[in-house]
Each structure stands twice: as C-alpha cells, then as structure tokens.
Length: 301
Image 1 (cartoon, one colour):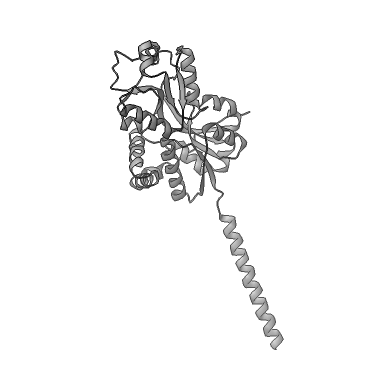
Image 2 (cartoon, one colour):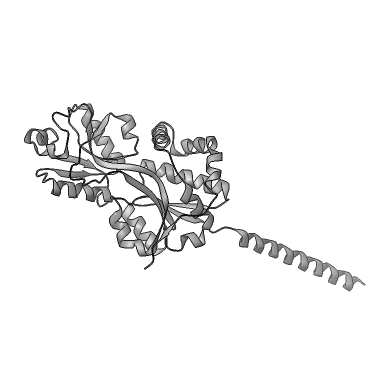
C-alpha cells in the first residue's frame, strides 16, 4: 500500500512538473520576436522613432529594440538583415544614393513627413547682401563667413549634397566644418553670440528654426532639390515577417508643426517625456494607424 501511495505521489509530481514545463514552453512560444529599429542621433529622428516604439509596444505588445548608428551604417545593416527597419530615410535627394545602392534588398514602407535641406543663414543678414548660394562667391561675403560651412557628420547624405553645392556653384575658398548635430549647432550659437556671420548646412523639420530666426538661401541650380520626403524603410521580407508593424508605418504620419514643437520641448525636458505626453494625447489617432493594408513598394532584385 505504501509503495502504491509513493508511486502515485511520484506520478503526480512528474505530471505537475511536465505541466509547468509545457506552460513555460507555451509562454516562450508566444513571445514575440523584437523588431530591430535603427535610428540616427538627429532630433527629428529621435522623436519619430521613439514615438513609433511607444505605439508599437502599447498597441501590439510588440517588443522593439533600438539601435543607433550613422545613416550609411543603417542602410548597410538593413541590406545585411541586421536591422529590420529605419524611420528616417530622406529618399528624395539626401539618401537617394544609399537607396539606389541597396534598393534590391529593401522595402519602402511609406512617407512619414516632409522636410527640406539647404544652406541657411540668420535672418539678420540682409538679403541685399546674401540671398542666393551664388552670392557666397562675393569676396566680401566669403570673408564674413570665413569660408566656413557648418555641417553635421562627414559622409552622410547632406554632407555629400553640400560637397556638390561647393562644386556646382564653384564656391572656391569654402570648406565644410563637420561635427555632430549638437557640435554643429553649438558652434553656430557661439558664432551668433560673437556677432559673427554663420553659414549652416541646415534641414527641416528641426528645432533650430524654432530657436533662431533663419532663412534658406535660394538654390537656383536645385542642388539641394525641393521638398524632401522622409520614408520608413525596411529590409527585404520585413512586411511578411511583421505585417502589423508594416501596416502601422504605412499609415504613420507626423504633422510638421507637431514634430517641431516636440523637438523644441524635448530640449527643455527630454524626448522620452515629450513623446509619452504626445502619445497619450493622441492615442486615438495612433490606434487608427494600425488599420488598413500596408502600402509598401518592395524592390525586386
């Protein structure tokens, strides 16, 4: 009798253990694979990326892993399948070379917002002195700018566009002074506080236009193009692997006024706080972004 009782107890323990293992295995099976989202340390990219992360985790319970690197590295990582998608590709002009190089391995998930690139100066500089990029060739203007164009990271799309502008407009005596976005704008601020002229390789949307009164120089040769479209781009196969996420990015739109407002507020608090407040205030709008069909443009090799 005792042996039978012990056998029954052992059987119960084994069954209980097996049940726990089965439950644990089921839990692991239901765990979602994280979406690896690449982003670049730009003010607009940080807001757009973190806002998307918050929406995906809240609406889909979709884990999101953020990986920061320069834009060229992000495109390489996409093509290699090491990053699933990036939400800050300026495909119209600035990052078009990257798209053309890797497009057979990429998917265009949709347009998020529009922007512009160009050389900008403080509005305090009279248009009678400098109105167009062509005016930069005036000797007295070149001297006032000390032949310097402040720009962000070496090798990114905007840096390359500025290099073309120097060549196409024959801006002899000018050089690009490259730094991080923060370093570039800190130097710009220092020059303004010293009452020096400053020339900026600028882009919008950006909080710089809310912080300082700036204007773009006319670009008759359209080296910088016209309006830019900022896209979400995924690796090939992204839509089939993450259909609900692709649907979201096909409908993810950010009004420029809202985006620049968040960018400015983030400087006073933090991007995380601003994003959380904006999402809470617009949750219904974000819910609607998860409905419908993903409108992607998948490039075939």
